[in-house]
Length: 472
Ligand code: SAM
Image (cartoon, rainbow, N blue to C red):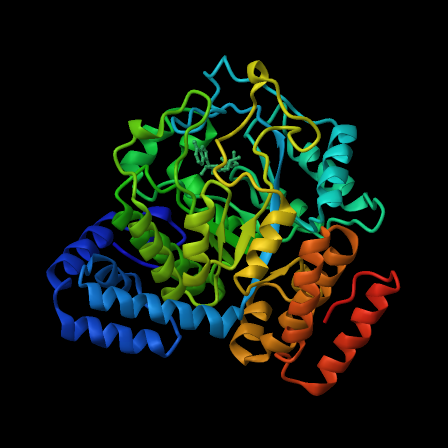
């Protein structure tokens, strides 16, 4: 029986409830009266249920879709302004004992080069990332208790936080590692991680089991219940995601929102972020072998609806997507993007020779961070390197209440401008710097509180004098 408060995977992601939801959506996809009612509710900016959201996803009326896009843009603007948070992934190890059929790290791939960074290699990777200007990382590793035990991950986090190269610093480490125990989540929390990210891959249990034929990840319930264990271990910022292409997107979309509803029902705080990866070509993986690929238009609609349905949840897009797709979904709701990513182990220090490939997937957007930063600013966005919230204890529901209070503009806006200023001073090309300085001057006016604006201006001057790391 469907029960969002249950701690059992098959009860909070109830298969029959998803089937009933999809049937309800099909029945009502042309019911314009209902669609208008749902859109009216969405305009209150309090989110939508998975059922309501699924009706909007099924609707193919062009005018209504346009209304959904307009609303997504407005909600995006109201909650996130024009700020876009920047990050990069850091692959620690691609040793893995799982059998995920879409991932080239699966254990039976004897062709891919297996690599695991030593602490010294991590140091070099982090210096390379700091030298680009990155302040926020997402750690990635395969699941392998022998090669990548929790002690290795913890030691790596410690190393990363300890490196201060020139004016560089990694100030927030998010972690994307396999589902684990409450005890290990507690260790990650104590190590000072930001968000714990784990993609569900697919919410469809039968497909999940086929796609994960062996290894610890094959346990659907253990994987699906991971966020509850993470929260029990004290991590209150968790990031959800599905790998689009594996199963029917409408099923995944309903499952994703049911997962968010479950977290809210049990822990009183929804997901901190939702990622929207699509399956990509990789070493021995051919994405066309999967039947459920979605086109760019459907992908954009999913992003817009996530924005409408969970307004307080950040949305992340990676370099799996091309510049043009990224451009489209930025306006529709995405709030965080990666730049200059390498998905190979050790890839920031050295280009890999063809025969030593350790990449997880092909990246589509291959631009440098400076190019991405400049591109964002030319479109009117503020690239933000801010990591203030979790360092100021604004995690979980405390972060959500900042969003809900309307005070976000007095906090995130100055933090974005000050961290962008650091980037311009330390890493930007001349062109980028020029555009950025003008943008900062203009955007200072969008800080509502006079006092905050004054402090921000003073701090910008101090950054010019060489002082770093101011935050509200
Ligand atoms: N091993 C951990 C786990 O099982 O969750 C870490 C995650 S893995 C390094 C990061 C994510 O990349 C996976 O959760 C999966 O969704 C995604 N991924 C795997 N193969 C992919 C592919 N061929 N194309 C795009 N994304 C892929």
